[in-house]
Length: 145
Image (cartoon, rainbow, N blue to C red; front, side, top):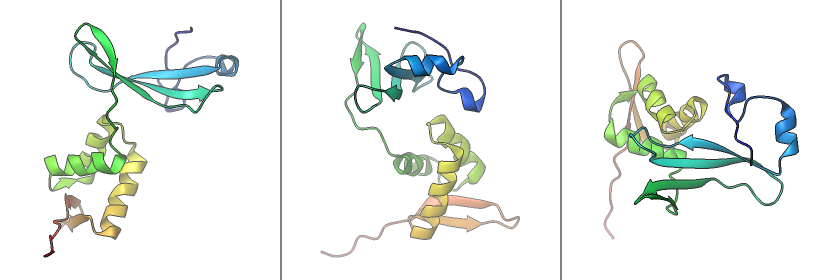
């Protein structure tokens, strides 16, 4: 077992140090906190190298004095954006980008999803006087069966 730390730069988010470290290991994981609550809370072990099997992320939760694997399905990036817009209807792009970043969705992916939602019609977009866009989920009409 090797314990290391991440770098501060965007390009050093898996580990900091020599590339020989990654070359020498069979399996490597990044430990990421998933919430900002006090205590140990929820953590994700995200595989960034695995010679043995397909790398998969593992989520664990500290409760009742021990670690337990979370088996519930992780939300997709689109589901995260939809949840954010339910909680913040009419939010601007900058606000959505920051909220999504906190939830683990990259700025680029969030921009892609906002554009996709606008094109596909699952997002309603309003453009203000100064060109600022605000977003909300499109209302779905339920037809007669």
